[in-house]
Structure formats: C-alpha cells, structure tokens
Length: 118
Image 1 (cartoon, rainbow, N blue to C red):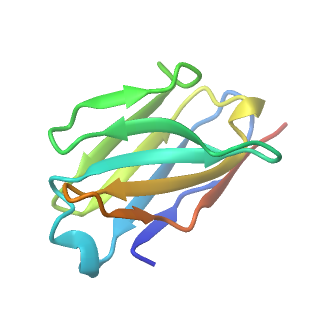
Image 2: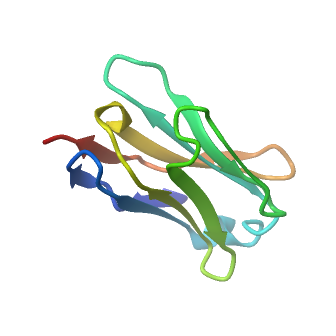
C-alpha cells in the first residue's frame, strides 16, 4: 500500500474528525510536487471527489463540503490531511486518499470508514 489512510470512525452529527494519509517511502520522493485529493464513496453510490490540494498548496472543494472540510498537506511528513467539521449523516462514506504525480502516475489509499450517526 503506497498510501496509508487513517482517522476514520464513528462520530455524532455536528462532530469532527481528522483523516490522515501517509505516503510510503516508495513514493515519498515525488510527494511534494504531486496533487493530493480525498474522495469518498457512500453505500450504493459512486466515488466522488471531495477535496484537492496541488503541489503549490492551492485547494478546491466540492460544493457539498465547502466550508466544513479542509484539506492540508505536510510535505515534511509526506502526509495529507482532511479536517472534517460539522459532519452530517450524508458524510457517511469510505474516504480514500489519492496522489497524482506530475507524470500522470496515480496511487490510491486503502480507504478509511467514516460513520456519522446519533
């Protein structure tokens, strides 16, 4: 596994979680200039793009999470984060991190489950 995601769990509506995704040594050499993203897949639905951060740290978000989720990166730690606040039931999904290199190579994390439930 080239990307190791963690931080998922059970949270009540309105709560917060922070997901992390650590790049392996095999891909760490080109982590810094790569574009990093978080996707999610809810039960019975297609995988959707949630947030992206470029090598220059420009970020973008889907309309459904804008203002509640924040993507960030720590190049020294080869880690990308997703801070999730004000979670609601519709945020329940498996969250996947993704790396797209400058040469077009793509890597996926194994997914981490986020369940929002009262």
